[in-house]
Length: 463
Image (cartoon, rainbow, N blue to C red; front, side, top):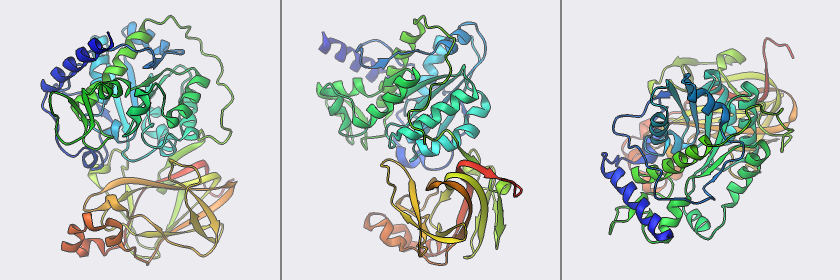
């Protein structure tokens, strides 16, 4: 019986993939090319996935379901659906457009607005900082949260959940778990990846439904009917991805089909819609108090700064402050336990130095895995590099955060005159462009989009 539904699922998804033009561009580069438009609708070429051909009780934990969303949509009222996550959410074939296409088929006469708050290469700590501006101000009725492949940082995830509930207690939340190379074998052996177990504790604590998007793919691979990572499909097998992380069209269909099946199950639930008061947090130092701010609102600038517009990033950064002369700085005050930057990396990205309460600071590697949250200590200031291996002849949104003990702080960040060894960072495999165009990489620039704060900014000198 199990082999029968595996074969049925294979045939259905292969047919859906063949019915549309396969997007063969590099999925990582595509999702890192800039900010995706916030509002989206699935295109005419997006396949309608089928819920048939697979059934496994492990795929979805219903818990309290999505009662408010189904009641509102069932009454024909307009609804807003938000998606927040990393590159698998941001990308055009990861699961997001297919999921929206299926939900539209469930409610063809309902006006549904959809939001794409995916940011490639980022985890829940940045997600907690940006969810207010990118999603919650638009009052979503349902939020899908995807961060399992990008660190699965539980404290950040709890902060996201609590911010959604605080903004609108009636909003429904569904955690969705994507997986990466080697994790399909964990599912195939009947287990759950360790990083996802941490997120499941949060889902259980808040009564949130959760969906294991990779379960069917893992079992298809075990049966020899799917290749998780490869270059070309062979012998009629589904090629899930080229890199072991970012699904191709057929892989995205599998992910979306898992959500579609789960939506149908939750639609049949008879769950009370009166939600109890939000429980005490699992992690007292979760990221509920995180936010991101326009630098012009909370910071004072010194030196040569110029406002610039980078159109490909306008969805995230309507305005950007550019420093290209070493010594240019900005200063802000806050009460809290972490701060950071959400900026744009590229060939000319430089280095910064940090002062906190007048003291030079040095950074210590993130103490918590799966984050870009570095620790700060007083000491000889070592420049923090804003150039990385992804800055080779392209521009991408990137972030870095710095943790402190809770307190009141004045932070100054200055563009350093020291230059990183960019050729060494890129390595031999990416050295071609810097060899041909060294003038691009020789510059020292900071493109500041947002200031990140875990806590509260202090405005106008008032504490």
